[in-house]
Length: 238
Image (tube, rainbow, N blue to C red):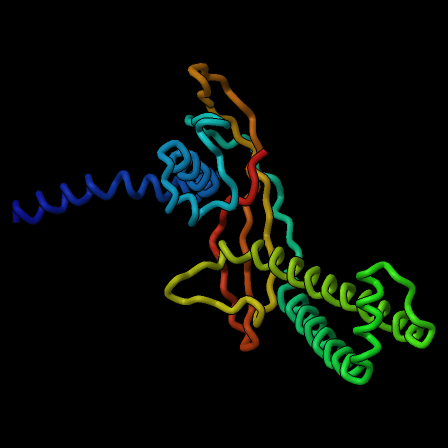
């Protein structure tokens, strides 16, 4: 009986700090403060694995300083916006298909006017006037080349837009045990700004600094209606 009580007492002593930490993290900005403190600790220690898992931005000790004594001052209201990953993925697919169709038409025109196009290219290379019989082909081929650049830019812009939107959600949704194809999900991006103070040491001097930490969380919904909530991550520090 005595042994049971002793074990229970020791267990209670061990669990008490953990429970206190849990209660602190779940109330009054505790969760945000715990995340932000973990971030600045990892930054001080140059703990890249931790930083890569929780943040999209760096706080370099050699350039920005080492932050400690982090305290949350206020937390702004959470903002929501729809994620356009599925929409932008479709836009990219459409642009790629249009580019493929255009290239097929261009190849067909090139095959039909192969000799004339070569004469035009040779004249342009040698900075000579194009023969009168090839002027129409030169004008057409110039238009084809201009449209080629337009299609390439459309595809590139669509890819950049999709990548940017995916990047906004990918870290929050990262799970090596259950990787998701985000292009197959609808979703929302939640953002909240946390005002903090911290003691920042840089080049041997320390001062209190006020900063705003932007946190983001992605919430994705599958075609089956299942909602998957990502982790809160640090998106920016200003």
